[in-house]
Length: 226
Image (tube, rainbow, N blue to C red; front, side):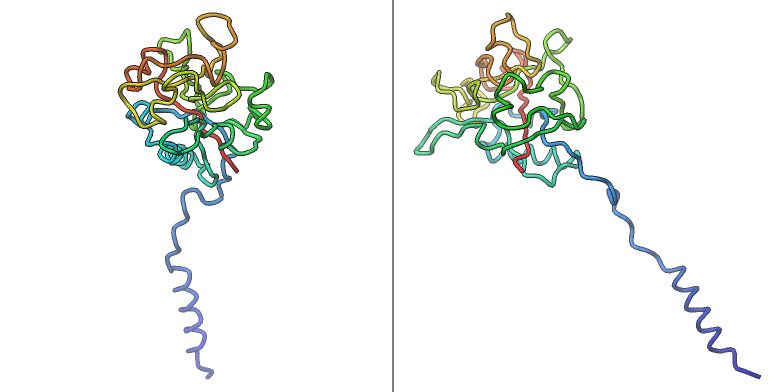
């Protein structure tokens, strides 16, 4: 009679292999990376216009983008700074890449830096969405949050029209002021500046309470620079 040991060993090996635990699959395995390359922050970090300077706010944009599945890009805040302490001014338009940029729903809001600062960009209340794909409330809503921090001129450069246009280059949460734009393109009147997405008026201060008093919440624009 032929021995059955080999058959038993093969069968036992197959059974053990079938019962062996498999490594858990990452929760986002197979999920496509988000096409989002532009958003309005859903919330302020908590200290008003004190954002930890450009490095701090860039990291905050990166954090929010990562939470939304778009962390594989180099995120930058659309903020300018003024010359200070030997450091040169920084223009918001020079730090956000070349475009094009899409919102969380995949809609292209601008094709290039020039388009972003031109009359045909698609920035609006309905298109300037948060990283969560949500609309930010604006003028006419129960809570107006349309003031977006920029510290910039209409063409995206450092604003030197006053002593302080950037709340101490985004390090102050008390005294000072910053230039804001209106994400919903609505102002107190129909003048072009009041309807600008990136330059509408200065704030009354740099604290979160001061920013809220003029119709904001200390929100920023974030762009993927690559």
